[in-house]
Image 1 (tube, rainbow, N blue to C red):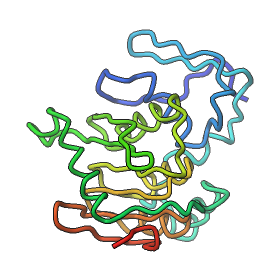
Image 2 (image 1 turned 45 degrees about the vertical axis):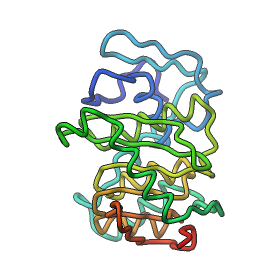
Image 3 (image 1 turned 180 degrees about the vertical axis):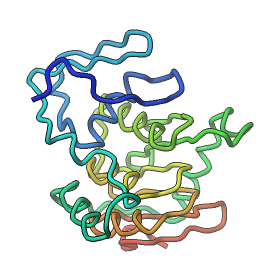
Length: 223
């Protein structure tokens, strides 16, 4: 059990620190419900999440799944353990709407001017409900998930859109939250495609103003 223990360090832009912490704890599978949390205290760069009960150390073992430091068999086994049940949402989205969602990423002035940060957004039933930017593609996703958790967003009817490359650890964040569709303007890597296929996530990458590429579970995309 973890009691009064330091868990991790996340290097991030100093915005939405509370949401970043919450999103990370949930989309890495450490917490499952807001009912587990007693209080969240933000003190400068530190975020203390006080839970009503202790956290099991096993909950941290699957954090940061990657294919870079393991055999393919061990990696596939880790993916299976990371998400106990595949995403079964029947939610569907028009390809045209995906293009509109991607254009919303440009609402970040810092992203438009520099292309040196990552941005992420969540659309629930076609409506933008969360938006964030960060130096890390992972952090940007953590932040929008944190925002959505506190707003009680229905993830099963949502689309996660981001600017980041889609590796397994990125896809699994969505899969743990039961988000059925993940869209990125960047490319996937092999581990991300495998993770999406195994967890029931529809993975759309290379999304631009005139094209999208659907890599897994295409039945959720209406042409």
